[in-house]
Length: 189
View 1 (cartoon, one colour):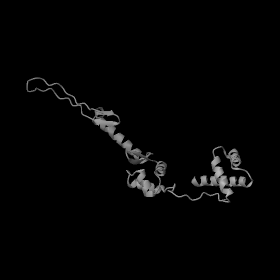
View 2 (spheres, rainbow, N blue to C red; view 1 turned 180 degrees about the vertical axis):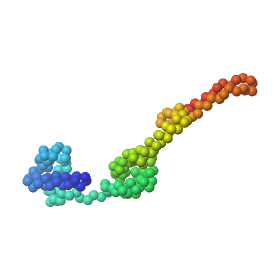
View 3 (cartoon, helix red, strand yellow; view 1 turned 120 degrees about the vertical axis):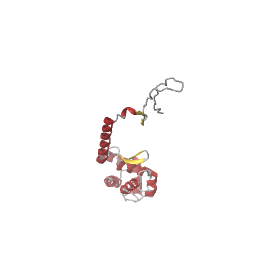
View 4 (cartoon, one colour; view 1 turned 135 degrees about the horizontal axis):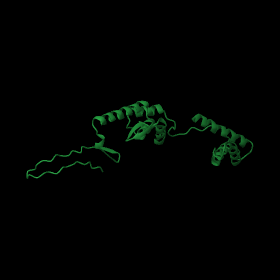
């Protein structure tokens, strides 16, 4: 996809060079290009920059090499770093591979990883993980049949708290009074 986009840029530059040699200015050349390819392909400023290069006898239509961090990254290396340490940060990956933090983040999205509780996990559920979830749900349902534990779970704010609601039997106290029944309640904040 990147090479296709690069080829398209060079194609537009060839056309700009053609219009430059025909004696047109940057605005006229852009207007002709937009009539054919659509309004958003090039800005007036981009056309003016290329016409400026052509006026200085620089007819090279390829991008000049740039300094700085490379935009392209080896996704296999990123994936290997994640598999070696699921708690690695994008900043650590960027430092190790000499990339920008945003480039690493973009590649993480493309690889299908998301950060959950500071651990990189695949965004898409694999069949193995799906089958594991089904097995767990099945075992919980079977457990519920033998020991109804779901009634003892209190949920609130994404927390599950298991508690036992044990009622004490009436007993005689030291003063020969009946003790009242007591219940335990979970307090969720």
